[in-house]
Image 1 (cartoon, rainbow, N blue to C red):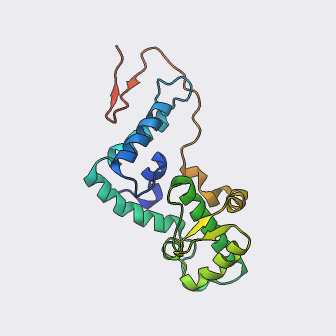
Image 2: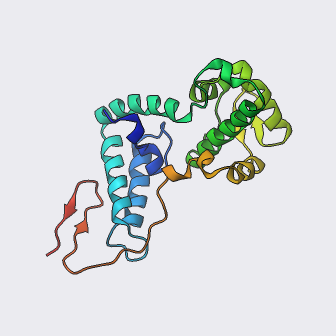
Image 3: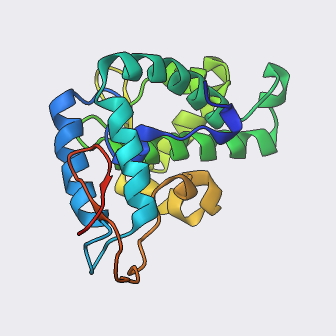
Length: 206
């Protein structure tokens, strides 16, 4: 089991929803693998390719994915939790942190799952470690400022204005550091390895 402080979110690496089916994971992996393949002289990046390959090998295997999903749920709760004690959720500073946390969650949800960008208040309560009754004012405030929308079935999603607000916050609030960084153009050297995009291993060139 991975330690939580070194946990890698394979779903974010592949830029897919945790609910994505096997076909979607394979399709997205192939697109990303071609982009970051070390032999791609325009966008290739060996380290990014290795990360994507590792993510695909886990998420494409039903048994390994099931075990990983247990860790993933626990890591997400630790990652997004903003309060250690319920009594710390009140006050002006706490209110600002709650609004930032809500926007960050919905920003990441929208970015990684365009088809289903919504979350329930129960999802936010669990991930942020904040009781529902202490989130309701924050949600009202963000809706009044048109940062969020609430659907008829009680699910929340971030708006374009909310995205602008989230991106104006501290970089850590939107967790950009957990995404694959833009690759630099790799230096090609004679005798370098070529890579198998099928999801197996590097292949020595002849």
